[in-house]
Structures are given as structure tokens and as C-alpha cells.
Image 1: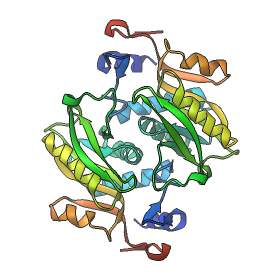
Image 2: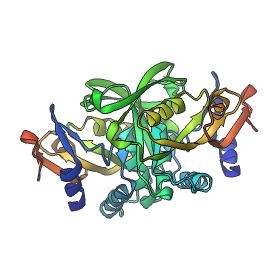
Image 3: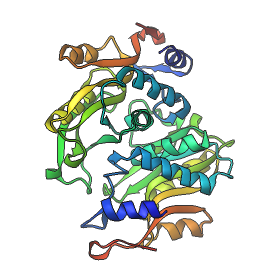
Image 4: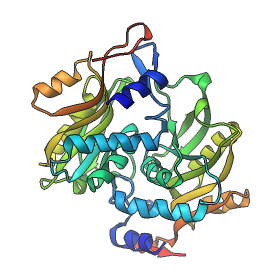
Length: 190
Length: 190
């Protein structure tokens, strides 16, 4: 998606530790108008898949999921991280997810009532690097007996192994921008 | 908002510990179509306020903020909780926020570039109870020199002190559903 690549080049920043900051339009300030273009793009890619739910994980995925869901006319379900008073253990599916950004492992949870075997889910997220979050979400969907149409990703770090890992498992992964390299702070796309 | 009260009565569940679960349509499964009605309602209330940004805090506020922002044609900024590799200390405004649900205190952060003195912000969130999250967000906005048009809340627990506390400070608070009591699991609205 050319407009996305242009926006990454003009507004993204590469930080030490292989971090690409795109929080000016995706994951802190959300450019909602641009997010609509992303939603339309996911509809082009997955519009024939009879999607019944958009599945994501808090927090950065939620905005993308909500805007995208409008084009599919389906609800969003977002998995939560960690434990909270208002999550009841035997009412949830859970899976462990390692966070590259936060350097820890969290369980992700989804209430059993919000995803079931009648669902065909599109999983969306802002980034794909090692694929841990997506593997966790796929795990949750499978526990629920739902089918997974695929993963719609805004930015894939294609030099990391997550994309290959998922595609090798037969998961359809569509990334709107694929980064080949961020060496010396210079972003190159595939 | 009658449709919201009806939805809370039909889909909400009151749990021990004064917890109202509305995660069937607001904060785990998101009924995006219904969320659009909420966005329109906030536009009716704050449409004349020359809002330049919708401000919220992760995670439950993000969906509401993104859908609402479409009606105001402005970006969303969401404050983050805790510390992460990709937040740089001297680049952020921060404020402490106690979480009723999680039973702890987190700092909330917003990057200094994403809110400034030219902004007039509408703060949105799913719940108002003690008002801690909103006070933190107002604090962030004030640190940035932005003006706060008010707070748009989906559900206010009007029997708790947050609403009065904020209104006594001169903050405009508009809550689409105001709960008077949840005694014995029975929800009554003001």
C-alpha cells in the first residue's frame, strides 16, 4: 500500500533496538481518516471471506480493528492482557504471548461467549515481527473452534521470522507494508 | 441515551465488587454499529466546541474514541499505561492514575508531540466511577497547555464521587447513561 509506505517514510522513526515508531498515526495518535484507508484495503483483501468477527489484542490493535470492522459490518473482539477483577477464569480462553516491546510474557484472554465455532475471524494487528501476538490470537480462535480467514497486518518486519512462521503453518497473512530492512535508521520496503 | 440504557439492562451483568460487565458490546466485544450511535450522541453534545482531538486512555477507550473521532473529523490520541521500550521519558507528559478494576496505580503517558496548546480536546472513556482516569487525562492535557472542552462518558456510576468531583472543578461531564444504583444486581438509572 503505497500511501502507507509513504507515511512510514515521512512520519516513522527508527529507534535503537530495532524499534519503528509510528505512533504519530497508528499507535498513540491515530489518524482516523488514514485508518479508514487501511480498513478499505483489508476489505479488498478479505471481503470475500465471509468474516463474522474482527479479532485483535489490546491496545494498539483496537483502533485498527474498530475502523476495519465498519467495512465488514461485523463486531470487534479484542483479547485482553494480564488479569483483571472483571475477567472470570473459567469464562475465558487464554494463551501466552511474549511481548517484544515490553520484554515480558503475558497471557491474553478472550471471553468464551464472544467467539465460537460459528465464527470466521479476521485477525488484525499493527505489527508483525516475531508473530507471537498473532500466534496467541490464532490459538484463542482455535480453542473456540472458530475458523481463521487470515491476518491483516499494517506493518510487517519481513526480516524477522514471524511472517514465514505463520505462512508455513498455512495461515494467510496480508501485510500492507513489508519492511525489508531498517539498518542505520534507513527504512527499505520489500 | 435510551438505547444505551436498554442495552445495559439487556446485556450488562452486575458482578460482586460493584463491577458492571458490559464487555458484550463495549469493552471486549465491541458492537461497532452501536458505537457509531454513541459517537453521534457525543457529536450532538460537543459538536459546537471546535474539538481538535479526541483524548482517551488505553485500552477500552480506544474503540469509542476512534469511532467518535470520525464524526468530529479529528485524530485520536490515547494515553498509554506503564513503561515500554518505545516510550522515551523526556518526550512524554505523565500523570499517575489509580485503576479501580486492576487495583493498582499506573502512570499514564502521552507523547508531547501529539497534544499541544493549540488543541481543544474532548476526553472520552467507557466508565466514570471515581474519576481517576479522567483526572489523569485532564492533567496530561493541562501539562500540554491544551484546553479541555469536556468529558464524554458512556456509563457513569453516579453513586460514586467521580462525577461530582469533576463537575465541582468546572469540567463539563456528559454521560450517556447514569447509574443511580446497582444494589442486589439490579441496575437503576438516574
